[in-house]
Image 1 (cartoon, rainbow, N blue to C red):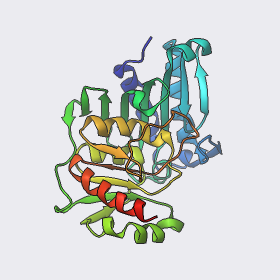
Image 2: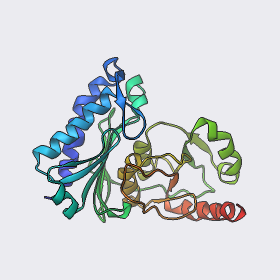
Image 3: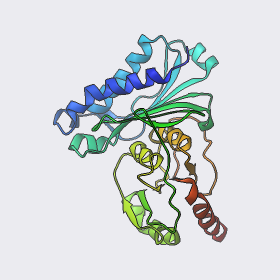
Length: 278
């Protein structure tokens, strides 16, 4: 049985109902173990992941789960999952540090794929764990916030663009110097702490671009947001200016840029200059 967008929405809403009351509480901060993604799993992460696993098991779905906490785990019959190539790529709580400290910017990210590559993503949902806004997309059918279609902004680099950055502090100064020709064109910069939810801000036009400088960014943080941005008319590519079509694996990590279509030419031109000078 293929996973429906309604089942993904059901998962997201169930996680919201269980996690939202925990935001900013002492219970949420309890550290459980080191997750497969490399970060310490907190109570909220584990609760959310258990809901996803339980939903898949109740629905009798044979699938490979790729998750921030558990890593890669086959649910149901492994042989069937290998045959049907179903994969669910999940970050149970994206922005865990925001969640446990009560900073109102955190989300759940769930993406469904049939195949082994990013291009095989078929459906995606991201729920805002504070507002309960649900962002979702199906391949070839557009992107939505709740029940309303959304699209990326139409701003060009000559407009007052607002970007978000994500970076490691020890790499920030080098990035600011290396990419100064891009950065000096920006009107404002934000740093909010949930990659999945930030990609939704690009998809609905609130942000014009999201530049992730971290080469350690994980697939689980990006998968759902990538499809939502693309279906909203946006672009996502590497710092080499190439489309992302990497393997669907817990081990995949990379830096990327997500932007509206009007900024695509500017970014790729500047990236080409940088890459040719290296």
